[in-house]
Image (cartoon, rainbow, N blue to C red; front, side, top):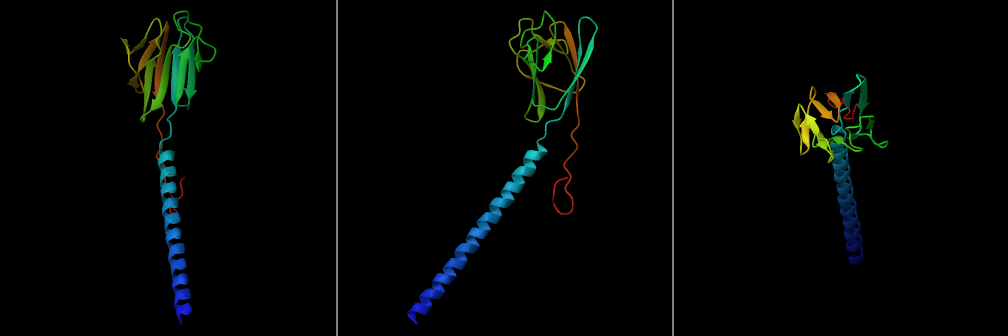
Length: 155
């Protein structure tokens, strides 16, 4: 009789343990799905940078990356042959849900809408800035919202 009771208790505890583990795994899976949805919603909007050089040339650059370096150096994302431009002159970066313009300690400075910037500054579509003798205009792409279908999957 005692052996039967102990066996039933052991089986009951095993069932409770597996039910608990199943619930923990289910909860972790839901959290993981929620995090992936959140991360997908944090997509970087593309940015179109139009460069107007001193010689009259117009160059268009479209980017989807989160950081863009402007300068004379060969390793820059936008490389220009402008003697007033530093090797690494300015940076466009996307963080905290916005695009920012930052001077990288250039000799001649970076000007946003004709005002010299000394700290990273938020930029928007239509802003114009100057690095060296080159003028830039910006257009930030709109991000379409994430749509969920009836099953709950992302589209």
